[in-house]
Length: 175
Image (tube, rainbow, N blue to C red):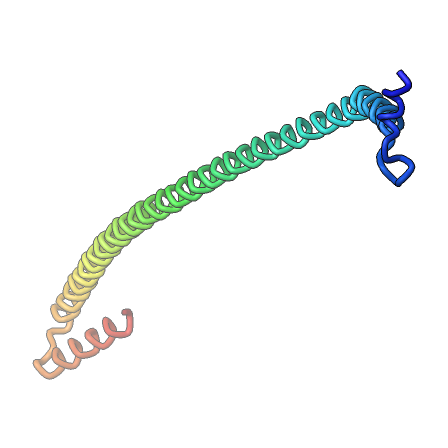
């Protein structure tokens, strides 16, 4: 065994490799790697995996939120267009109703004006007929009066003309 140890120490005196120290260092290095793998690498990878899952979930959540926001935006745009269309229809309906009402008012006003005009013409005609009748009655009564006075006086032609002119003048003043 001595020769084996001597063999391992070959060249150690001249700055060579010392195999026993290297094997011990290799052994402790492997133990260190095993410990690091168990206590550091595993939890580190677990944390990295958790972080990766968290980021993936956040990205997925953000995508869902973006999709929902786009859908809400489209819905809002559709509702806005629908409200605009309804408002336009209401405006058009109101204009049509206003035009119908305007025409109805104009027609009613024309009918009322025609009725008033006809009533006024009828009143004028009635007043004219009454005035003519009153004038005829007045002329008749004056004629009777003139005739009775003429008969009473038996006037000359000149006196009769004078009398007629006076009565005509009286009739003109009575108007």
